[in-house]
Length: 169
Image (cartoon, rainbow, N blue to C red; front, top):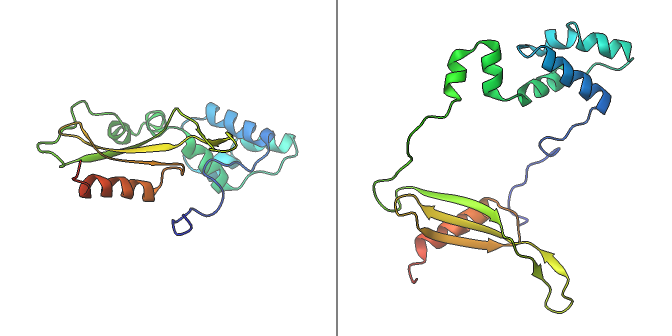
């Protein structure tokens, strides 16, 4: 596991601002859902006024951009009148199919509903992760990988290797 790449920096979704400033930004975004550039949004009426009254330091424009990007893309496009983007984000009806076996293999991870315990102390170690590779055409499981580690590129590749090279079953 020490050789597997890990993303550096803060975890995704981590917020650094205090709750009071987060709430001001959130309510301003709700009041002005069609806001586009963060510069005019942060300096415009509402957000800047409330921050000034509360004697709070205004956030950086990238912080505002991140909060604006958190709003669902489809909702944001509809509110702004960007019909082409709204159309691209809608689901297209139809069926995803393959014409021959192993043409398309899908991989999925799930946490098993079982606890693994230590043999001697009977203390719970944790819940294992099950990675399955499924053939779209035949809808059969072509490979699996069971591990205590969270899903990663390693577990996906091992599952696919098992799927392709293990023909003894």
